[in-house]
Image 1 (tube, rainbow, N blue to C red):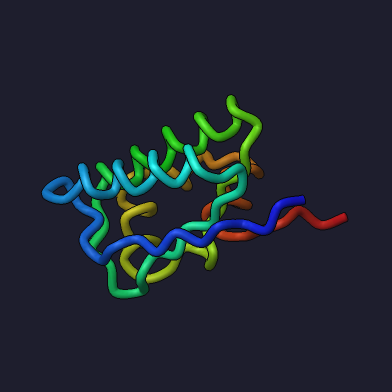
Image 2: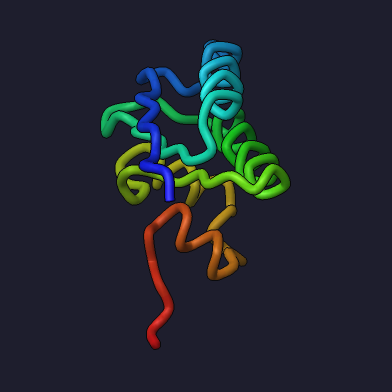
Length: 105
């Protein structure tokens, strides 16, 4: 399996800079089949970024690629997830992606 390419996201992950986030993800997805996103602990995060990540997850699955977070969601990213309701009815795959939770065997 290919070693994941780590993509370091900038710290403003909000609608004001969403084009930069989008461009970073699209470029990375075109150049690699396995990506890990490194999100700064002090990043500003809003719903627009979460929507881009959810779309990237779908796209990567469709293309047979791997997309994951380098670290489980914490700080502002975790708070944005809680505010958005994305974790309210999260599937096992969602919780694995965002929180690195695995099911007990």
